Amino acid sequence: MEPEEPESALETARRQLHHAATYLDLDSNIVERLKYPDQVHEVTVPIERDDGSVEAFTGYRAQHDDARGPYKGGLRYHPEVTRDECVGLGMWMTWKCAVMDIPFGGAKGGIAVNSKDLSTAEKERLTRRFTEEMRNMIGPNQDIPAPDMGTNPQTMAWLMDAYSMQEGETMPGVVTGKPPLVGGSEGREEAPGRSVAIITRAVCEYYERSLSDTTIAIQGYGSVGANAARSLDDWGATIVAISDVNGAMYDPTGIDTQTVPSHDEEPEAVTRYADEVISNDELLELDVDVLIPAALGNVITEANANAIQADIVIEGANGPITSAADTILSEREIPVIPDILANAGGVTVSYFEWLQDISRRAWSFERVQDELETEMVAAWDDVRTEFERQDVSWRDAAYIVALSRIAEAHAIRGLWP
Ligand code: NAD
Image (cartoon, rainbow, N blue to C red; front, side):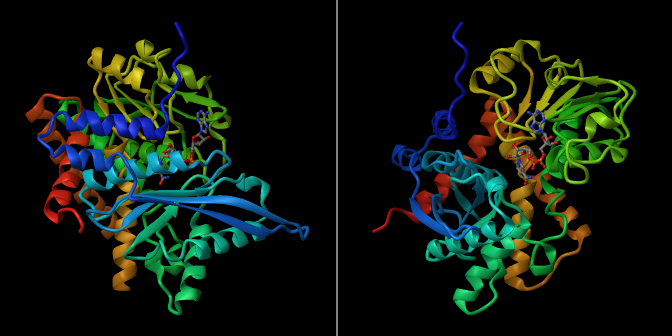
């Protein structure tokens, strides 16, 4: 058998668009339109290196669709950033915002650079110059970037400062994921993991499992994995395995998740705290009630999908299951809860951050947690209703909810001119 070549983000986004459209009575012109981004900006970003030489990098911002509100999506610094990857990931953001019913469209951008090769001062110069090159395309009512691979709250603070300097006023709403001191939101860091936990709890309830009788294995112990693990541990679930890039900690009696440092607290330390270490591949194949891949894309493939023993899989990472593996899990009747719903807490709290910025009023951590819970439960209810009505997979149900909202917005707005 030929080894499976994982789809690109753009191929996945287009395939899922077409698949969801088959369940809906939509104007085919709208579906055709959604296959393409509204626009893609490509810029050259020259910076002076610390040794005095000048180097030029290529940056992109793909704006997919803004029928429901300003474009929203991450900005990554990674050597493999390409135009098509930004388009594909921007489309995913359109679906993610729509399934959450957040009034944003989708975008993604990045610079093809290895950020580890740059000093802090070089990263700052790169970010400021990129912001200036993109200044006419971004803005609180136009397109709002956020951190992604290779970027962080500091990058967003520089971007906000560069934009604000040129506009002549402080405009925190131009980016989200900033440090709270300059308009960032409390609870943003915890949000994607928290949403994974809220959705896991709802799914367990749906399948009539009490969390106190549920065993869970989680791959990745970073922002998503560790926060999901700790919330679920607090709510009574038994977390039997967690992992990082070095391997997995396994304890069938349950791990005390507070005592193991997350990636942010002490990078790649999970196995150092473990009595029993297993491999990441073994973690994925454990006989648990719930499996949460929350580290990387494409970890469940044609090669291991038949070996998955979990009863339910919740996608914590973006795209952890290849298309062939998704088909196998579906044939094996293992419910898979899709990333665009499960980890959407990140973009939801980004929306809260933007609301706080434009109204100049900070929310408490408790308010963020409460409102996140409300939004996640509402989105879960919408997806569950579609799942029951159409007799489709959870993934299809989420895409149907998202696409129907986007298509309705296009239909009501009509075509310009
Ligand atoms: P992170 O950098 O905070 O943590 C990643 C974790 O995965 C670390 O524990 C790391 O050791 C582990 N890891 C790395 N390579 C691994 C490997 N080969 N095998 C096993 N574990 C490995 O990252 P994160 O923010 O938690 O993101 C994880 C996933 O969730 C990514 O797919 C990301 O795109 C997605 N996601 C993140 C957010 C967010 O806002 N942080 C939002 C939505 C989706």
